[in-house]
Length: 150
Length: 69
Image (cartoon, rainbow over all chains, first blue to last red; front, side, top):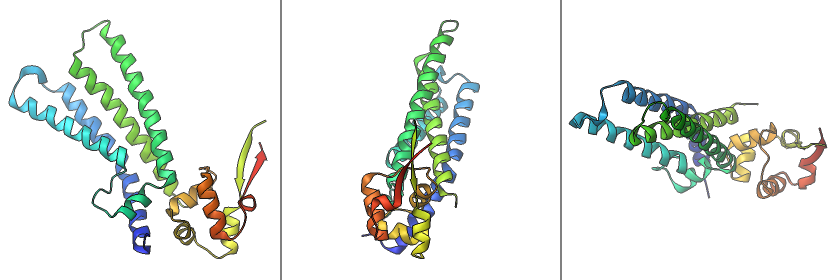
């Protein structure tokens, strides 16, 4: 049974999550921009492996946050409140938008591939970036709107 | 013809002098959920509708109704 403190904590963390999600999307996309604008990552230098590993780690963490709702180090009650009915609906809607964003990225890459060869790694980067960023922005937007007083 | 789910949640909550946070605690959800239901942004599940009715001491039909758009 959640206590009054659990409700307060869930409310505070929920607001924080809503504020942070679009910010994470910006950081994530900025990281992708440096990946594509920087030196060729297929050169095999140690720094390139770190860049790829950093991107992969961030992608996995963001996916886990999106899938679970975060609050991993909080009590079960707080996590349940942070992922109540409206949050689950918002997340499902965000994943729907993310799926379409990823599919649009796939179409874009396919069309671009007709004119210029694109490597598998770059394709995965583009598709995952579009998908994850779209989910982050949509989920954050819906959550922020829901938290607004009214 | 399209129908929308209207509700009197804000009015019934105010009658009982409950804040959104207080009602949320009675129901076991966050204040955000109560806010979205009151603003008709979110259509609650049957489970949540029944919990809201129980917390306010009235029937589900007293809170929710279908209206023609």
